[in-house]
Amino acid sequence: MSNKKFILPEEKMTKSWYNIIADLPIPPPPPLHPGTKQPIGPSDLEPLFPMELILQEVSTERYIDIPEPVQDIYRIWRPSPLIRATRLEKALDTPAKIYYKYEGVSPAGSHKPNTAIPQAFYNAQEGIKKLATETGAGQWGSSLAFAGSVFGIEVFVFMVNVSFNQKPYRKAMIETFGAKVVASPSNLTNAGRAILAKHPDSPGSLGIAISEAVEIAAKNPDTKYALGSVLNHVLMHQTVIGNEALLQFEMADDYPDIVIACAGGGSNFAGFAFPFIGEMLRGGKKVKAIALEPTACPTLTKGMYAYDFGDTAMLTPLVKMHTLGSSFIPPSIHAGGLRYHGMAPLVSHLKELDLFEAKAVNQTECFEAGVLFARAEGIIPAPESTHAILGAINEALRCKLEGKSETIAFNLSGHGHLDMQTYSSYFAGSLEDTVYTESDLQESLADLPKI
Ligand SMILES: *Cc1c(COP(=O)(O)O)cnc(C)c1O
Image (cartoon, rainbow, N blue to C red; front, side, top):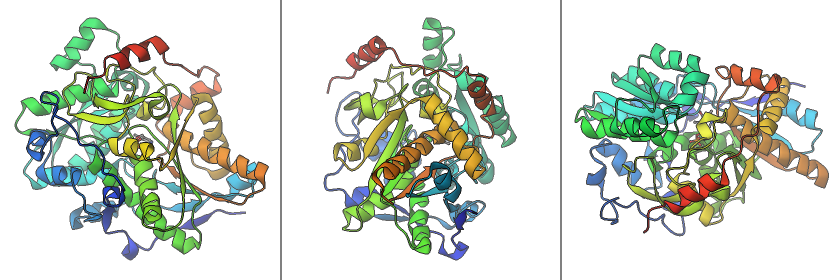
């Protein structure tokens, strides 16, 4: 039995991004200035971002046009396929139908270029020559490196130390696309030096790397900052995934009962699920959305919904989100892209509105699911994406138990071709289910800013 692919013709490619804020019953709480604790205005963000992205960040418009030059680059890999996983269904012997949207076809091998391209475009349009950024597993760094090369922007990447060592090929990929990369914490910034003084062997974290990149951008007038997840405009750029999927389900003459994605900062979950949740909010079909996160960094399931900093050095605005505390350093798991202390404020807000469910899963069971998927479908998933696969498999097995033929769709956020060392560790039996330290979490939560 062969798999069925739903490929959108290029002329039907989605020409706008979707902004779920337009359809929410209650708007999300505003970001606050770290000093005054008052809502920030667009001018507060000007040192870090180009104006067009700031306007998108605060926009309440339902749809925002994708500029022609961005669509042009999107066409290198978009529309991405929606695939009916018939062979996985058979392997599970489930009456459920399973579909996945495959974002691994992009230049970086994940969904991240969907936002890297427009971010570089708007910066270039406003005359910016340099971008500083952070990267966890290296997916974002390589995406922005590519986007920078497309629009003539120099990109400087702070790469979380543990990934810098675990993923040398990601580093090489960042360099191939023309960007510079250093391990974070580094001695290039005050934020990095402060951490190194306390923890010379720090594995680093996204929170630390963000502090370093923000510091560089804030100090250099010719440099702006780019973030690969979490912010409203990033989530909105990613909705190109769900917008396409909606059209592809029309082609398939089907519609998902359940949509699933993994959640690190929340951007691929939002990008895939928000367009479906939006349909439901506007009176369309009901959908159950599920976000999967690692038990080692359980932001949605164990974090507090509170105002917190997006970074470790407390340089960013305060945003209300599910957080483990900005000083929390998650244990080193292999899904580096899911090792962030916070969750996108917009995703967090939807969680508070009960518009989706969150579940935490262990990395070994995720790899087991990833290997099963690879053998059935012929795609080796990124460690992050295995969380979504496990979520889909668990739903399919529930359907089998209940004898229900539900339609399950998940986002396969990326391939794992540069994560094979991790697969080797898994097969060697040396992959462990690292748990965070409860006292560290309590300590970090006790440090939350008082609002
Ligand atoms: C970065 C990344 C993630 C996690 O980031 P989100 O913002 O939560 O989407 C998931 N999967 C892959 C392949 C990634 O590169």
